Length: 174
Image 1 (cartoon, one colour):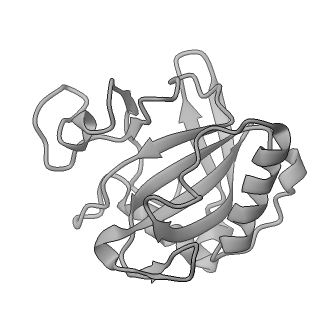
Image 2 (tube, one colour):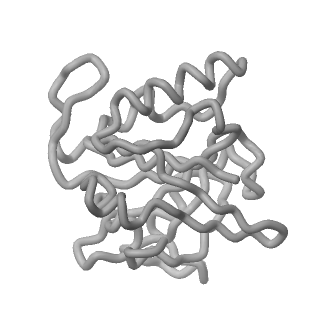
């Protein structure tokens, strides 16, 4: 991700806990590794593919995602590049929010195109930054998730303490 230190292999496991504490060589690691939600396919065919990573104090892993909460930073670094063995995706950040982990933002599946469109509208409405990405142009996306640096407000208006607050960077994929 240009403008950040984020340039890592993305791992896929059988659960969402293994790569929290293991690196790409399967060695125990406090930094863990960036990984795809175990319910998603690593070829990014889902409408919304989730990638998770730690917000490390030394600025590694997904710590740089919190920079996208600043409009000036986003204006200079809108694009995300994801490489799979068969395809290169060019992504454009279209929304960034902080919320609780179990929020509407953490939706992986949609039963209809209308529910996906509603989800995109929700993301845009909660975004702390503004973009000119047209929601109707988004057919699939990736959500990059890490721990937030501050407390936030959840979907129901409740205060979410920093230890339960997450940063969601929403990326339209092409």
